[in-house]
Amino acid sequence: MTKSASEENAIGASTQYVDGMRSALGSFAPITLQPTEELGKLAKEVLDDPIALQKLGDRVFELLEREIRSQQERSGASGRRLS
Image (cartoon, rainbow, N blue to C red; front, side):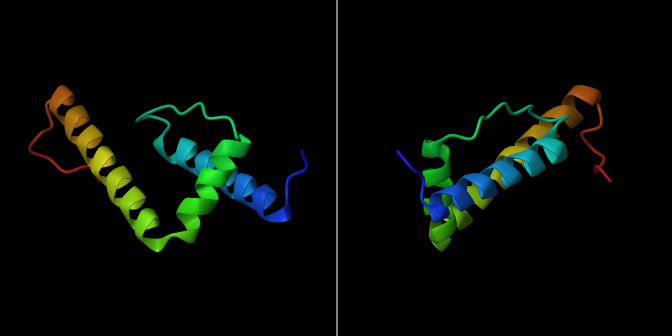
């Protein structure tokens, strides 16, 4: 089965996004996603749907906030903000 140019672009975009997230969040939650056709299709669907993209961004932000709070509590820094 041959991939279309848009599928290739979606897979490339999702891989680039995951790599960027991996470097930004490496200390929070290691990610080991391998780009697949299914992941590429999902990435394209989300990127093409502004509401889904907003929901995804909101959820990622919520999870990052939760993780930061958890790390602060574990380190005894619950009253301080991370800089």
